Image 1 (cartoon, each protein chain N blue to C red):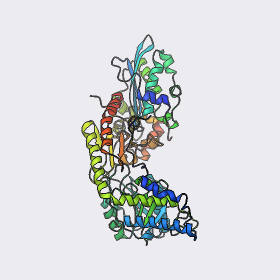
Image 2: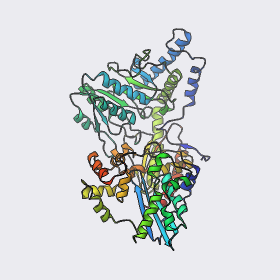
Image 3: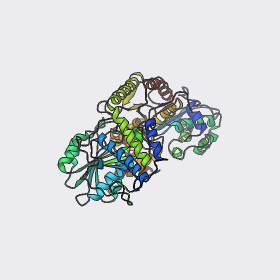
Image 4: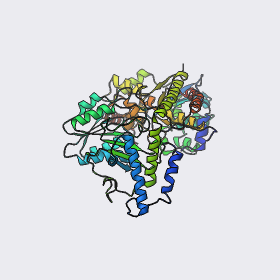
Length: 191
Length: 389
């Protein structure tokens, strides 16, 4: 199922663990699929001087996290912003089609870390901010917003990336509400 | 990736064929190749072999001989039972009751029937995975024609109150089907005592061959066939019989019947050793499904803060074969419908692993898993952003 390269990076991931003196981090994930990534960066002279990751997820999620750290290290921020999901997949000699959507999040995580760095944010938005953001969705009250947060949705992007069918897996959401949510946030209705 | 030691703990997916079974089957590929419908001697030999296997199955389930229909699989048996009963009895009503933790062979068949004008009630289960007899009772309507509840669950191994549901269905004159694919050989099944009308089983889950299954059908129950043709298997399953497969299934059942009590005890002991060993030695782990009324060969464990596929592949690299609670590693990315029905959060269901033991599993195999697993879990937890102290 996986290329040799994916298995190598899965079994011996590079640049793993929290970067203690990171300048910024990016959090991305698809909790319903089971993948959550934190990418940490340290920036010096507009270049990525150091980078690391923490990931909960399948082999593809771990391998793409490891690979993005290799691809981004030493690059300028502008260069790093240009690394795409496909670049990561190609560098790993490809990913199974079904994993391209779900687990290939590392590039997004890196971009988010850089955006956060440029906006002077060290981490992602706080829980309160995210809950407020969720409550802008019609039909979502504080209780539902909390359900989404508890299910691991750490921002609107994560909701956008999750299909209607996957959202069915979140306790407390019904079909009607999911349709409202997807109409509001856009993104994939289905795989 | 192979290591010296191979420990196969995915018997819920499939099992190695017992060599005795292979031996029994082999002549039916070559010298005893006849078509069981033929009147000549080779045909008669094939017919006798089929009827002999039918006898073994009926004795094993405590049914009559002409109540066993051979099929190609557990899935086919489920389809024949559910669609067959629904289409044949639709004049009496169009309501079906099943549970939310059935195998897809039942769930998808029910969904298909919903598109054809039937109504289906999907009963919830308790936090430890049981259907309540009271819920079944409450769901029964005037137009209910079929209840289908699995004997034991394939993911979490919980054994349902089949005899009680059977009794209830019998009292109300409703057909009762049970998918016993995972239960056969691991539990004593008696279709009379359990009040079962239809029961599905499969060969390859019990150290028999793939491509063969059977449906027990109480004599009085009427079914619409799925396969039309030469009228084989009492007109319910046309197709030239898979004689080697049927012989293999018969042999596999015979072996199950011979050693069942001691096998159940042996497997239960190994299962408990595995469950206790994991829960005791690895923090943040939980058993899914009940401890009691559980298949003797099933352990399903949630490992918090990590994902199942990465556990599966790490174990595979050490020669240990298991499956994920979620189907994330295979075709679907959706969390397991069974674990969600228990009330687990999606991320908890993603971190679940099913271990299923078999006839050839040894105490040394379990020791090896218990030695190997903690390091794998630790390595993956070190990578994870969650669960850090």
